[in-house]
Image (cartoon, rainbow, N blue to C red; front, side, top):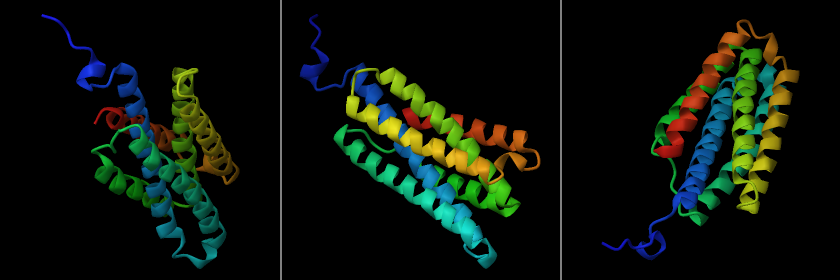
Length: 187
């Protein structure tokens, strides 16, 4: 029996599938980041003496909104789809943000530092995987990675590493991030 090529059957090949996975997981990550900042701001916006921190979080949230809007567009361009876990990431991201904010400023910054470190590594790996393929997507990923590095650095400067039990908190958050990445790529 003769095989019909994927292109004739209008079935995406492995490269197209992988690009769709990348766009889907990056969209999910930026969505989750927005929710984390919203959760943190829900706590700190209610405290007038935390206005400086709220403004800083708002600035980082706006950066994540820009990333999310870009991946909204890229999802359509690459005929991908959002992860089916989006409703869960909505709740989990907000809860993580609010929960760490309730633990204090440094814990909120520890959350930011931990998440951004995972995303930095994730984006770097994606850029390496893309190589010379999809140069515009690679450029976008590297630009966003640089933004995430800046967020991580800000969090460290704001005392993230001074959080009690920082190593434990960081490990728990990063384990959750890695699990979310694996799930969001495929589902």
